[in-house]
Image 1: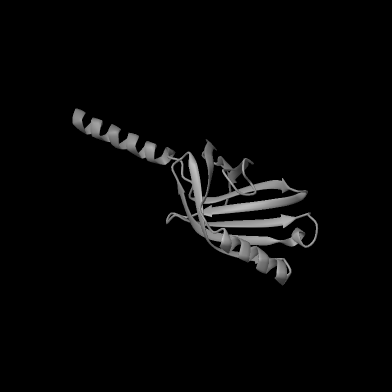
Image 2: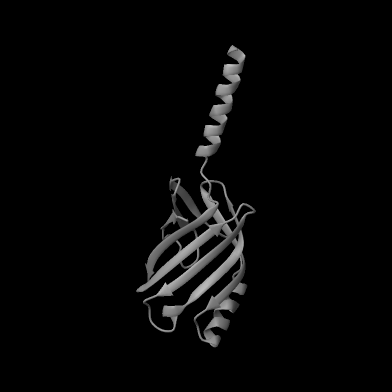
Length: 146
């Protein structure tokens, strides 16, 4: 009987530990101001290490005030660093010439992007890119509620 209680207690502890493990899987949102333009960003992380990043601009100067882009790729995290390796990008809301320039720039710089990753709670984390336009700028992401 004592052995059965011990096994039950261990099983309950394992279940509770598994339930309390933080997971990045799901959708996360942030809003920031970039050069006088409001930027809404959603990142969706999948179980298979796939990631989709959606960016929507508003309130800036034309033609960038209606720009949106979607990046698909893969991600890795060790709990301290988040690395996103882009694969494809789709740009909308820009004239064809600017869209082509953005896609050309993306393809020329298609490499893993890493940064500091820090959990604030089960439903909030911060990300600070190590390079690129956002280098050193910390964004706070909150879990998107269904």
